[in-house]
Structures are given as C-alpha cells and as structure tokens.
Image (tube, rainbow, N blue to C red):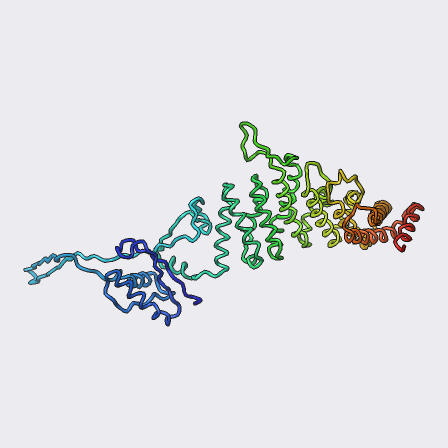
Length: 492
C-alpha cells in the first residue's frame, strides 16, 4: 500500500537463516501490523527465540526504536541481556560507619544492532565525491549512526517515481562528469533512455542537462553521438528545450556539425586505423560513423529549431546559416544513401526556419545567403547530384514561396537587386518540373512529388514576379514567352 515500505535484512551469524535476505515491513498503517505476526513468529522460531507478540516497526519511529523492534522481529532483542556464569560477589565492610556494602558483578551478553544502508546505484568505478554527496556512488553501504540521518533517510521512503528519476539522474551525471569514455558513454546512453519518454522530462534538472551538453564537445565521437541522441529526445518538450537552449545546446550542436564537415574519413567507407605510435582514439572515423553522427546532430538541431527561442542563438552564431546551406549541398566524400538523406534533412530544417521566422528570413537576405539558397535549386548532371535533388528543390521552393509573402523581407530583396535572380531561378525550376511530368520523361518517377514541387515553385514565381516588375529591367520577353508556353501546355 502507498506509504509503506520494507527493509531488506541479511542475517549473517544465524545457522538457520544465514545468508538469506528477509524483508522487514515498515508500516504507516498500524492496522497492517497484524498481517505480519505469523511471519515474525516463524522467524523467532527459526532463530531459537521465545515467541512473543512482535509488531513491525512503524514509519516515523526513532532509530533506537526501529533497531529494537527489528531485533525483536528477528529474535535478537537488543534490550535483552543474559548473564554468563556465576557473578562475582564483593562484600565491603565500613566499620567506622557501621555500614556493609555487597556488590555483585556479572558478565552479560546481548545483541548490539547497527543499520547499514545499501547504496541503490553503487558503482565501484565511480570516484568518491566528498563535495557533493548526491554524486557519490563509490560506497556500497552507508551506516546510519544518528537520529538525524535516520529521519532524513526515511522521510522520502518509499521513493516516488520522481525521486527515483532524480536519483538516476544523479548517477548519470556522475558518470558524465568522469574522464572515462566508457562511463561517459553509459551516462549519455542512460540519458537517451530517459529522454525517449516525454513523461520523464519534467524531472530533468538543469545541472544534469548541462553535463549532457558538455559531452557534445568531447573527443570521443561515440559519446558525442549518444549525447546528441539524448538531446534530440529531450528537445521534444518545451521545458527541456528551453533549458537546453539556455545552457548552449544549439551552439554546441552547430559547432560539432561544423567539425563533422572537416572530419577526414575514407570515401569508400573502409576502416581508417591509427598510424604507428598514434593513439587509436585519435584515428579518423569511418565514413559510416561520421554519417551517423551527422544524422543525430542534425536531428537534435532540427527539433530544437522549431522553437523561436532556440533559433535566436543560431542566428547569433551564423546570421546567414552557412552550415545548414552547406549540408544541403552536394559534398564530396559522401555516398548513398546518406548523401541524399543528409541533404533532405538539412533542407527541411532550413525550410522550417525560413517559413516560421521572419527574423531568419531577413537575416539570410541581409547576410547575402539568398543566392546560395537559389543555387540549391539549379539543375546539375545526375552523376554529380549525389541524390536528394528533388527534396532539396521542393524545400527551397517552399521556403521561397513563404519568403515572398513577407513584405519587409522582399523590400530588402529588391534593395539588394536580388528580385530578378529570384524570379529567374524559380521560373527555371518550374519549367524543369513541368517538363519532367511529360510521359516520355523519367527524371522524376514520383509524379505526386513533382506536382507538389511545381505548386511550390509556381507560388514562388508568382510572388517574385510581382516584385521583379518594379525593378530596373523588369521581366524579360523570353521569360514571358516561357510563362505563356507553360500555361498553354498545362491547359492542354
């Protein structure tokens, strides 16, 4: 029942019950004590003690009372003493005072009980931590000597789910703070296991998340990957998302993503070992390891960036979002399917930021990144495309279709004389997409995707044309002719 708990007791010296772990109930409901009378009498019989009415110790009792009741429960009453042999009798005569004193000295034996508490998450690999007892899991058992220790220990018994998760969090934090890569990996993986259930996020404290984010800058890529996966899981809740942002998770993810773009990995995916005399941990990763790491980092960042508060530090670090744009591009040293998957994930993240946030739109334009986004929609030979072209084109067209509706952003586009190039690139994409829908064309096998792409490109064409007309040079005759051809062809 709620509020009641048990204490595991191990009897080591008793021949009958030696080595067994027995449970002593500690009850807040006094009415339940009768249920344990038969158990107590059985234990007393096995211990060779006289049977008596012994109640389980109630919760909230003092340490002395608990030990006394526990001793009686197991037939080792600490208040009971028995004489050993014959006592020594001394007679002291005081003739002057006319007084005789008889003193009897007897040797008695009894039981002295101590209470040792087993550390629930004891790990001998963790170092002692005298500065923070919550992070000290080096001791297998702790003796409760004082009443204050006993009352503190029993105050939160039995543990609620929240308390248990807090204790587990302390254990994971202790592992993350060590310099041992194996322990750090266990800590990061444990955080991921907690993060996959959103109900656990309310019990994650800032210090724990701070220790997790610190692993994103670590030297061990396996630990970094596990930490990124945990951040990804934690980012699905608003509370933890804001905490992660406050402690620099966005900047840490972005920094590691930039490093992955410079990692020296084998283009063929073969294992790249360390040279003679070189530490194996410093050897370049395999291509698959780099790709997996990028996937987790991009996934975590993409979920964080759904929140406006999380996009602010991204813009502060990179006003033009060059890292995301580069991840959308075709890069050497990548093979399928990750080349296309990486580009698609990065393009969706970039598109989401542009569509959600006017500050992002204006920052990209003023920093001069709009031409780089338009370049992602340009046609390249299939052999050089690396996959993901259609998805990237759709995301960029959808982003620009939202951008042209932002009057303030488009004013900046016109001022920078980028309205005409924007119209030209969107028109070219629309023409290629409509052409791919011809029965004889096999470039885009997914016709539904092509139709959606044409719709996004069409909206971007319409909006950019409105602003291009007012610019010097305006819309060219060839562009009007192409629009007419597409319109007639679509009607037919």
